[in-house]
Image (cartoon, rainbow over all chains, first blue to last red; front, side, top):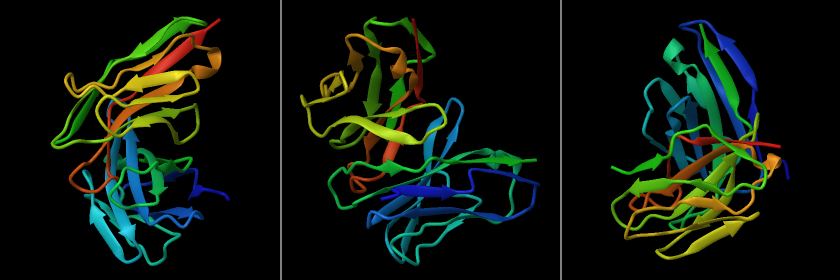
Length: 114
Length: 114
């Protein structure tokens, strides 16, 4: 199993550009989520999904869109990048359900918005 | 809302020293508590967890006890190694929204020197 994979590893954007961060998992996990990691702020939840076709907002959803058409994939879209979106983005997945499950994290995407 | 507070870093220790990283939390209900570790250039991985009061999580010589009366989950290790150098995150799972939404602390960087 590859686990959770993310592409690209690093990206530079200009303000106003759009892009999609890719996330895929091969563990048949129901739950997937996106976090951003900023210095001194830990990780903050952007969006999450409890299964294919179902998504919801986390703590910091503004400026980001998500969709979940398959169990395996959970892309994160930046519609119009802003310098405030410079961050490291992590995708995570877990089995789901109501009991606390271990979340598995991808290696991260480092994004720089100029 | 939910929140997690960790001691500020960085923490620098000599090899074989005793480690304590403090973590306290605020949550409604009864969250589960986690410690995640992030090695340089990698994503987060679960170090240990505890799901109810007085539970002790342990892994790789690290341990933490869920203390409901003090709302704490301090991480300890009796003898650290250079290979333990990493960033450590305390987290809780949202007890009201299912077990998979995590709230993270800001992280504590640990550097272990020879």
